[in-house]
Image (cartoon, rainbow, N blue to C red):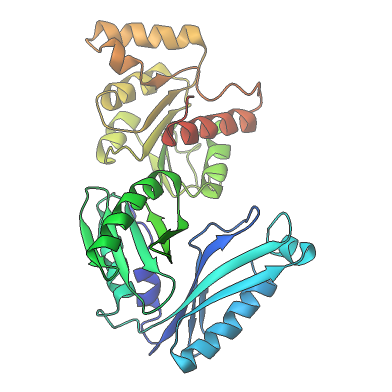
Length: 349
């Protein structure tokens, strides 16, 4: 399975640069098309990687400030006020302010606290785990990494700040990246987590829309079907992987973690039942089965006779998806992904 992308990957891509300016979007009023934590690297050579917004006036100002930073070497917190027209240009619904943190980084300097922190993040993501990186927003750069198993790496400069940061990080791990204050100083708390992997059994019309919407939601998608005429790159250009063969055999090779969501939309007993046998006792985060309540009950009865408990069978969401009254394939796909997001965020679905 492909390893999640990290900042270190971008720094390695910019390894030929003696120094880069790293711009990080840390806050934005209104609703932005770029999430908090979006980054852009600006190299001495003029090379650009990524972006803090969808382009336009903000990125232009960030690039200008980054060029100046590469000469001075100082950190800088850039606050950009926008009128309604400028805000609309970059994806905000109304005028407001965006804040961008600018740091000068030597990609090959492992002693840099930011480089060291994100090297830890890369290793954490490779283990399919999450972490929160806490960085200072004023004064010298410092970084603290807190992993989901409670391990701390680095420091913000004092034991007291590190302890308070760890308490805030537990909230950020659930709710998302944000700026917070400790003892009058502002810090950026950034959540890093592997993407949800959407395992789709059945390469029909619903699956086609699922892969398109999954990409917008930054989910990885794996389409599995035994029919090579259905499971093709032409039909699924948005899928991260397409696998042709017996689904029950293929899913056995996919690591089962709580960040895996299994969606059975083949509507075929010979696919559905063996795959459910595999996943009902696996630690996946979501299992959904396409079909009516009657069909869902029949599948549960069959598996109950094989020894699966009511608690295990209750993990299957069927009928699949949130009830939004949809009938078309895109509407069903939307309801499925909405339910996955609700379950992932601990909401009732």
